[in-house]
Length: 220
Ligand SMILES: C[S@@+](CC[C@H](N)C(=O)[O-])C[C@H]1O[C@@H](n2cnc3c(N)ncnc32)[C@H](O)[C@@H]1O
Image 1 (tube, rainbow, N blue to C red):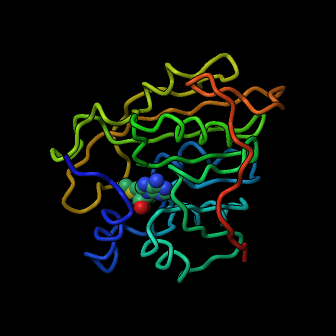
Image 2 (cartoon, protein in one colour):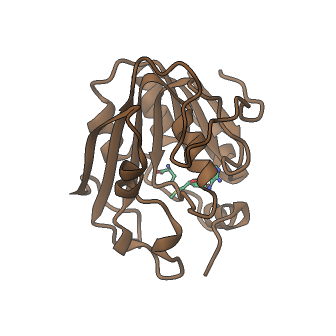
Image 3 (tube, rainbow, N blue to C red):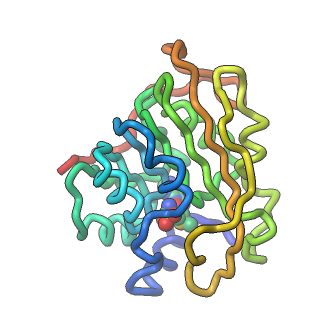
């Protein structure tokens, strides 16, 4: 089975001039359009279309990706309100309780590293939203094992009573699938963290988040 490490992503981005459409993800637009803007974390921002859409809606965006190729490509476009950050979220946790929106779009959440999921959930501020969008598990390329990853519905089951789940469903994609992939459905989890959670919250593994921030970045 292939590992989705930095080399994998750099090779993938490097294999084409542009990997994704340049448009924001459909579920992001559907679920976030009516939210009041604040601080957003784009987890695995890729070439940056979601971050740019969020910034255009007034969000201050921290956009993180493991791939230097993706970050360089993203940062070469309009970047007002966006801090592009090259970081491996498997080892560099984002700051806890800090983001009104944490957007996780088609990001591989490996079960081998439950701490990563924990840290991403911990990054959501009190009363903030986490939006996790994946492909349907049965649409994963065959070189990967679906059991190796957390899927949105599984994450919903792991959330404790500090969360309110607003959306937990599979729905047809509203925008065409990336070229050559044939993806048909999206799996969607949208949940809100309780307002009175001011301490660092326990994650699905019951542990508390580290207060460390992601590596240096600057907002333009
Ligand atoms: C399927 S792509 C999705 C990109 C973007 N969210 C979108 O929907 O167009 C997954 C992204 O997550 C990034 N990624 C994977 N593992 C990562 C990690 N451990 N830390 C940060 N980014 C990571 C990859 O480089 C890639 O850009």
